[in-house]
Length: 282
Length: 319
Image 1 (cartoon, each protein chain N blue to C red):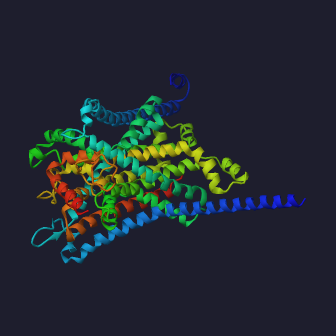
Image 2: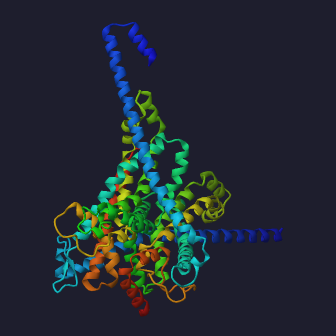
């Protein structure tokens, strides 16, 4: 900058000097704009990050005293969530047990067997659409199909099957990514040794894709734990006297439903009655 | 000699048996996998058929004719009325408003994080974004109820029709939705920006543009399809959000009285998911089919959003 100035003042006609001045003004303006824009971007990011951190800190500050208190996990009484945690884990374990083989099979079909064509396009489109269906709508669907048509009523089983619908597309995509990342050479090596395709998948592809598959399982587990809207009309929102059983036909709640239930008490009486009445029918 | 040939025969026999068995198991596996893959298509068709069938059945009742034209939802009156326009309006208003707030904020965050931020910002913020993408909506709703609502009540009391209820309604719901969809939109936008090849940036900088000019004139246009997909995905999430929004809406079945004003945002109000959550469980007959119809409307809207995002994504240059 200073070198330019020197040049422009020591030598050159007035027009040249004018041009250099104009260029300098332009540069300065662009730099000012650049700085303003950068500052705005940084401030926006800071605000967004602040929002997230405030929420996390608020949750930690208000939550940790309870988390480290063993009475919080008691079986019954007010202000304890032992049954809810058990139900959440129950739904988590059993929905994963159903989800993993089905989603993995579908992913294997799409990656290893299917040829590119209309069928694969349709399946991918269906998966994408299913991933975008609001979970409350899935809850209504689960209520219609699993609770009414198949007659499971409000039960853990209906909830598990609804969670399968909810998580299928997510798990499918993650499993597909895991399988695709296995190198082609490894597959060809397996096939060249004379193994059948299924044998090759079992012994070569699945072990190499295991880390990706575990990632998929963990991510879909997070979705199960967080889910509530799809479960209110399928699992219910009230507990029977003893929830610590493996019986899949009882109606229970889980942690997220419990939070919602407690914070909307005024209206929830109706839903509790509804849960009870349906529960008594079956 | 003879014994040898018998032996070879036996070996050949077991070999072909084994081949046959493995081929058979291969075919069985193939079939099972195919069925699992088809299952996902069956599920989505089932959702459309079951909800559509049950929802559209409400139009057998002549009183349901005003479903899309009236805002009067009074299924238990002597002359029942099934006008759902108020619910749909609630969902549309909160979704659009939160999208309008989120879009510039998310793009700014994504631009900063991909183009300018020092590395520690990314290592700090990426995990936080992931945590919030999977945050249970109930937790956000709960925080909204105990932190945001009292705060908004104080803030908005002068313009709200009822000072005690000023904190709940569309205003609070919009803020909740912003918190819910911001992480999703930011993450997808970051992916879109990262997909723009480095050569585009270098070319722009080599022509003498400042950082901001480079972002504005080269990176953003190149990533526009991906950014649009991010916004549409955020809208899909926002329109279907149920519990968190329901907790801070607290409306019954009616829009606020009087003409549309700012006060509408700061009093108990309604949307589609809130109506289904609160009233579906005790409904029967046409009213119940009405809630299925509301669910079907949600389904159609999110389906259109998905089609839109697919269309946009198919036009993107960098993936």
